[in-house]
Image 1 (cartoon, helix red, strand yellow):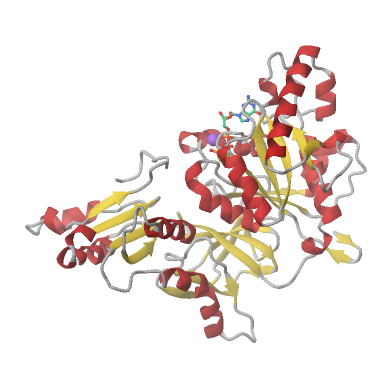
Image 2 (image 1 turned 120 degrees about the vertical axis):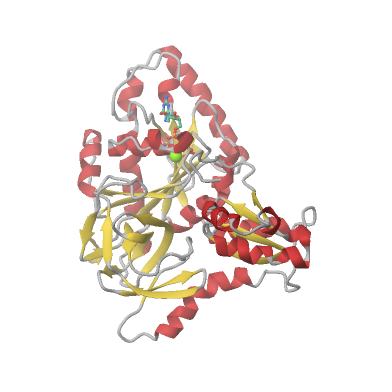
Length: 457
Ligand code: GTP
Ligand code: MG
Ligand code: NA
């Protein structure tokens, strides 16, 4: 697709909001999937990505009879968790996107993570549309499956509309208290100054056509420069995962540029930079979620924007949240390796130089940073001697247990949002006598986190 002679990439849209406002369900409704019901506790605990091709958007919005000129190839939507523990994932998601959907539950109004999300969006100057979700829960709501919101509203009784207007007014006031003007999108006369609200239901689909059309039209109208496709690879690692038949893979969002099978890449690893070669470039089918196990499409090359799974050797210790670099024919690998490690080096430099302190382990660079900040606060003030990212393995326990001789009270691993594979270790150690004595305590500090009961701890 070409606009003013320029080719546009797909906009990246992040979906944010308080827990259980219906973010994943809205995407399920557009995809025709049921990802939400497969989630542990019905709670999103990872960032996801779904690609919606322009044809599907056109089909879904045709009832609005817009002169739906879509100049973008599609839309890449990033799902984020709303649970309070995952601020780092919301931050990573919002850092990647061109625009956002802020989901508000019409029955609850603005909630703590709505406001946190708002602040993340304000901080980065990211434009967003409010999806005022769960309208079907208004008492007496008459279902108009997948209808544009105007059509659905015309079918409602006076009582339903009174309740709708009362709640809407209240929510507009709450936004005002946050310093933002908002208005129903079809009444909004100051687009750009006043943020748009689209009433939706993720269960019966009312308002979904409006939400999709508004997103795409808004993006192509106001973001041409930002969405102009650039050859320079811009790519962020979302998650590191073992996939049967592919070994350790990384899920990435490619914001700009092209990736090819066979490209030499550099990622940031826990033990230093990793230079490797792309063995396979995989995507889920269009309209399917990258974070859900399924069948993958193999590609020789992929152009931005896309959510991609990359299989390559040596990805085990890749750190989520960092950038992926492609080594071009004229590039110096050593320079790229240095660039790749910049983010991590700045975190590493925060470790206590005295060599005495606890061992801290977290799932991602972002959560590790958050945890180190927390441990430094005066009320907590716990020194840190070493850090690691990823599951707790035997080597971590061995490293941490060094502290038992130096300063016993620091002989502890503080583990956030990671699994601890200590079973094997125990077996091995049973053969040795002093089993318990050499084990530092592994403390899972997930105060607000949702435990997956299947985790081996
Ligand atoms: P997190 O990712 O955990 O923050 O939650 P979420 O915002 O993705 O919400 P989710 O999609 O998990 O939905 C939470 C609950 O609300 C589920 O039980 C959904 O079925 C329900 N729900 C979501 N959208 C709607 C809606 O439009 N109407 C009604 N009635 N229920 C909804
Ligand atoms: Mg969710
Ligand atoms: Na949920």
